[in-house]
Structure formats: structure tokens, C-alpha cells
Length: 173
Image (cartoon, rainbow, N blue to C red; front, side, top):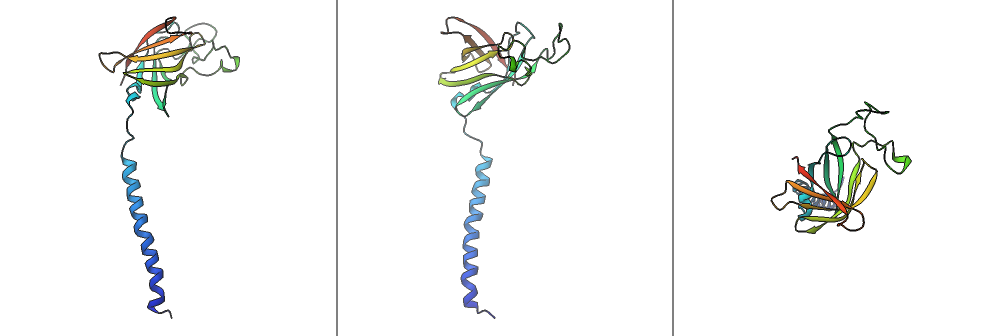
């Protein structure tokens, strides 16, 4: 039979560990409920409707933040299948990609915007945009229209922005 004097230190030790662990678990639960702080550049994130393209109509591009950069992926196509030709009725694939190994990848789900970084004042730069209609990747800049966060000017270019083309995307959500 153990005396009360011998059992007490063990029970006290177990109690001392339980209290801080419960407090730590509670703090972790509270922090999990607090949303991550929005970054100033996060105004770019969301779902955007592109202008009609040379091939295949319009698309929805979902822009998200990945670390300190912003990326965009095609999540909807107005014309998800080829309307005519050899691939008529089949889902659109990246046929015009200069890399033959990538020509069979689906356009739906394709990451077309990458590496954009926020430079301030509703402008992003330093990234690229891929055009599946011609298989080319361009340097890119993006800027929110001064009237609000619902219009985005997307400029793809070679070399310097002077030699490029601007399209306007509309926020969907």
C-alpha cells in the first residue's frame, strides 16, 4: 500500500501538465477560427470573366494567392469542346503549345497566370500570362480599373509593355 505522501507528487505532475495543454489547445482553436490577414494585393483574388478569345470564346479565371505571388487558373470555358475540325466535340486541349508533350493537357484547369506580384496602387507585375489560343507565354501586368475592383486590365507583352495587347476582365463574384 502506497502512502498518500508518495502518490501526491505524481498526481500534481499530471495536473500541472493538463492545465497548460488545455490552455494551448484552446488558444490553437481560437486562432484557427481567425481568418488570415488579407494582404493589400488580395484585391486581385477572385473569379474573373475574360474577353472572348480568338478561339473558344470566354473563360472564367480563378485568381488566388500562392505565397507572395498571384496565379490564375481556367475554371470554366464558354466553349469547353472543339466546335469543328479533327477534334470536334472533344474537350479543348492545349493543341498550340510549342512543347509537344504538353499538347494533350486540358485547357480547363490550366494555370495561365503565374508569378504576379503586387506593386501597390492596384497594380501587379513581374509575372506571365499564357495564351492557349496560340501557345505563347507573355510577360504581364495587371491593373484594377480606377472606378472599382470589378474591372481588371490585363496586358500581355514581349519585351516592354509598349509592345503588347491589353484585354479587360470583369469580376464574376
